[in-house]
Image (tube, rainbow, N blue to C red; front, side, top):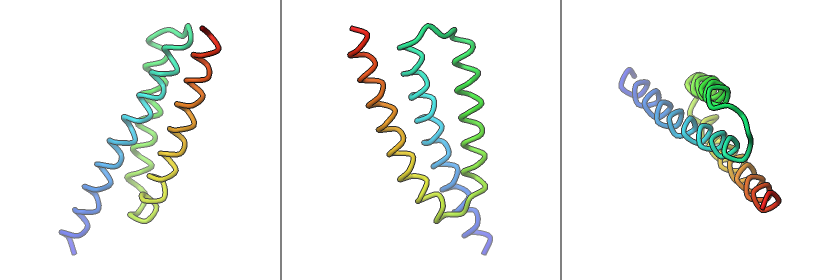
Length: 90
């Protein structure tokens, strides 16, 4: 029983780390297209990443799978918007 629980926690940590990197990269992409200060963007991305990691650790395995698919969709939308904005600014 304990080994199974540790395995679930480990998988949650891996997913949280992946999601954290996705959030930080999307915010860094946003920061490169705006004139926001580095400290403001860093603080914003760090707080979002910590909140997302905490949320993912609290959820069970099935919810993690659902959020993983949702995360990919949201990231694709953010990247699409970033490309459209960069084309408009050129």
